[in-house]
Length: 251
Length: 233
Image 1: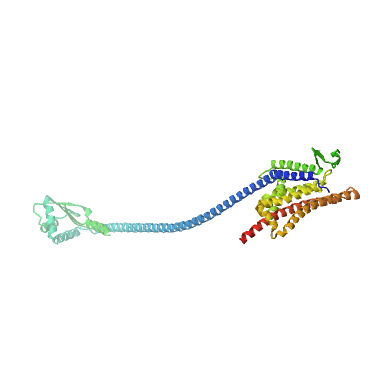
Image 2: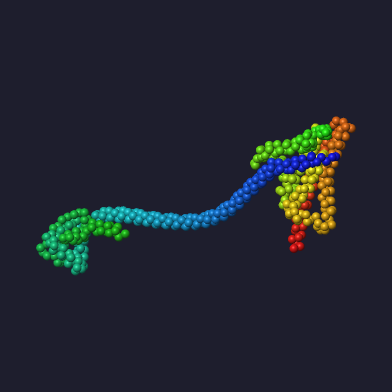
């Protein structure tokens, strides 16, 4: 247990040198490294916090945008539904109108077809009636019937109005050459004279008119007198023709 | 004129007129090993993915820094090299006695006295650097100049206690191990050697912690007194 001053001094120097060595070759590099790593960790942490903040912000904006999109989607869906309803109603109305038009058109066609059918039936009935009547009247026709018809013609001429008589006379003057008389049976002289005198008296015809008589059995009974453009019909054929033709047109 | 070589202890060498003891040579060896290890270590420092050795060394130094800054939050980095070197050197020096053929430098009173003297000087050095010479010396006469002798006696006795405590413990440990080895046999001193390891680390920690407390008391006494003066003003 001796104190060696040389060792004492050398140990002091040694320790101070060791402090310098360790300070420069151990503590400072290690602490610098640790500080550097700590700064790097802090930077990474700060970056991570910033990224997290940005992520939270981004998520918030995304949620807001999503909510906005949801609202827009709801509004668009409601508008689309409204438009669809309106379009559906419009199409239904158009379809209904089209169906109504088709129905009306069909009804008109049906009515027209029914009317045509009825006309056809009536026409056929009239035709059949006409044929039956013609056949019956053909069997009933006779010169006596013809003379009666001539008398009826003369009587009817006497009931004509003055205007009609004037028109007939004017037509006769324009074509004064011939008065053509067609009869179903051959007219005997008294019957022809009676007809001529009746016409002259009723229509105040001149004596210059030429009279021509001819026979047409298709008239069944009676006469047909042609005065220029006027034709006087007093026979069963023309009556039947008028009856069935005008009867059919009357409908 | 007698030959000075006859007065050298075994293992000592003579450099010029000075005899260098085995303690100093062992200290140089420890310094050289530490220096070489530091050179190798700092070459392999990596910022990312440090190896297990780097992790262990960083953990050790950060633990020392944490212990120092717990007591001296503001001057931690300033005092750290001195205290950390005390801990590292004393731990290695105490354990070096376990190496066959070597004796621990700390079983030499010259080494422990030198370290105690350095602690004594460092207390004043850090105290003066902290508040200045005038304010530092003023605390010896506070609260009364009568306490000045007691302050001086306290400084000297705690320094002596620091030196002799470490010397006595290390010396006694080696003596006990040697006696057990002589009396009991070859493998019996192994538990004593395990106790030596624990005791070496405990003594290193104790010496360094006392040094830290002394330095901290020198710094904080100045700061406390300055704070009281500011409050009085």
